Image (cartoon, rainbow, N blue to C red; front, side, top):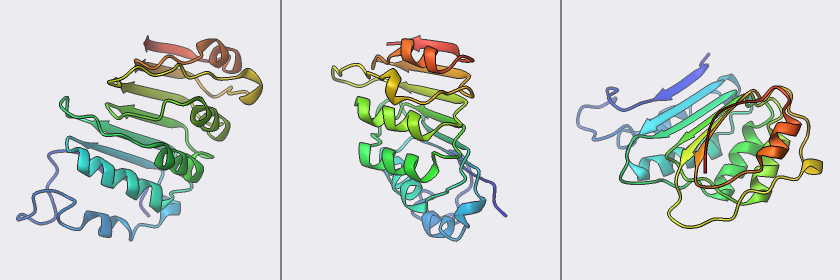
Length: 184
């Protein structure tokens, strides 16, 4: 049974003639893994097109018992975008068990309804790490206290982004929250 899927740069690709994991049929191979058994999913890469393929794969695969998602872009030259539809679908499919989400140098939706949905769905969340900079001005993420459940398990927040978020509401709903880093 597979518990962890981790794809990182520098790993040997299945075929020496392939330029990447995706050129050699990795997504086909990953599709044989039973979604119910996977608990940890990590992808690190530096090619935006591969990030987009991985976003689609993660959205389509389901993984209903996923506890940890880490998506890390190792390139400083590009910023892959995880659009609202893919992000919400991933959360809908995985959110009930999700305990840890790390998104580094991956642009996320910055609208308030998406983040309210995220916190409503991911009630087991313990760690949230978001590190990205959007190239344009965005409105702050406004979280309403009445719309969020209590989040007693939420203990760690690293919000290193230029998108402000309602910390007062998060602190009220998350009595055990320790803030590692806030940069807006």
